[in-house]
Image (cartoon, rainbow, N blue to C red; front, side):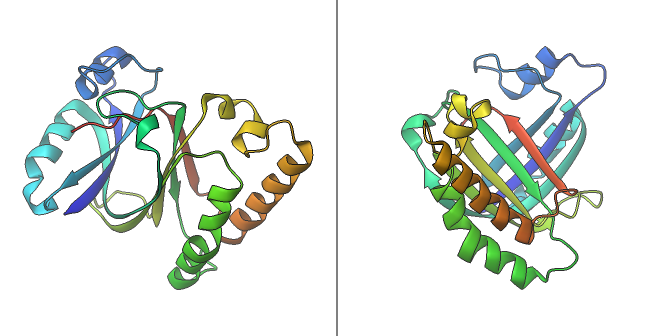
Length: 202
């Protein structure tokens, strides 16, 4: 079993509605965006050429990756099959700073930062995807992709985002702990953070 991750860009001539319908035919309408991220589980990428051929037909550009999935948090009640998940989703694409080795990067991410990410934030879904290899020569040199979901209020309320509602002291503490950890392994000039919606489909 392999998990594939794709960044997808719509064709210039397609409307946002057309692109959304191609990807989410039977699901409720979503916010307007020209860039989607999909994760697909297959028995083997070797058998997935039809899938990728279809994606290329309906998009202007795709970047694909084979990833290794690690599910840390997964509140399935808030992300039911066939419909939009509660709250909002955030997909984060990470590159390794040149000053770190791969071992150092993953050691910090998995053995230090993971606990901080779930202790200081209100995420109810948190999935780490280690990139095994790119699927296109032009695909960026990301090292990992994070999938996480938060309550709607977290988009505009830092107290909700940092799990510190009505507690300014805890907000400051959680935000500082999180930023201190991020600065140790993230190059903020080489990070993509995509706020979006999550759909889980079979």
